[in-house]
Image (cartoon, rainbow over all chains, first blue to last red; front, side):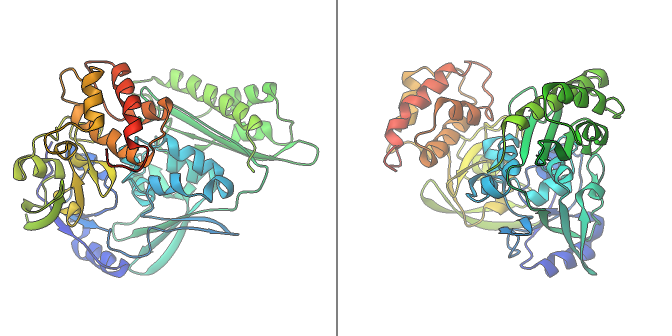
Length: 289
Length: 161
């Protein structure tokens, strides 16, 4: 469907963008890359009469690497992440997973902030943020705040972002050397929304026992999740096919799995267990530099 | 609704288009600039038929307002040929029968042109991966892949092909 009547505004600063949000309230939406918002408007799943394009707001398009981790500005595009030569070393999971996000032409425009604000439970970046314990920096009329990704996603397409706030950046904590990681998703067509996906990473102590296991799941519930029960299975154990299978099977048992036209909840739960297991096997073979 | 003139460069020519701000770039190209080679399929970014090249990058022109493109350089499928002669990529599509009904073809040509300019040594897996964003319901993709593979040679020295 064609878009509804729209006014298009281009603030030149973050303060001006926030002031416009304050002024126009629910009539206005922020526009970043538009790769999620525009389809939502076309489907009338979202409605607004004013679009506030962030493209002239300075400072939002940088990828910053420090010893405190990786910070992605909210206007960083998937393309920028794919082409950044530092990320394969300092955040290899993100670097690998970004290739699974949407399709080539979409990755040329879709942005970090747009994906977070959209909050689709099947999207990769929100799931990576939750699995990695990333934090989201937000600017509003009363200054800045930051929120753990785990508290940011509330329901499908509903986040903790207030209508007068702007996402500034996403911060990933440091990634230790020799960390093992895997990423698996399943969709009907390459690049489409995942029916389920699994993100895993863990470190190993000097006796080769697994420590700090992280297992994230997406496309299965109202928000991206950590599978705490599966993580417990791994903690303190040696990596191996038997423990991986057990963790995958038990870890998904109590997850409240949604159903849709493509997959009922039993199928989706079984799919998730398969993907968690595959991601663990992948992780055991893939260690970061 | 607001309406404002935007200036863009389309296929090398500077143009001022009078567009209402709700109009997509795809519709502006077709209905205002009268370049109907850009096809509108799904209108929500899934099919890839409307793909054009903006400042060197393949993008969905249905997921962009025309006003967002102000000041940019746009190449549509009409801009690939040179003085009525097919580009190497287009000629390769004809040679390999990589076109059937032709509806998806403009989006595939622009996407592959942008890809090969950036990655002239893209291998078959990469080409297929990128092609997965363009839906063709007639031919299957075998001939399309063959056509793109053969056209790579014309891109290898940074030439515009």
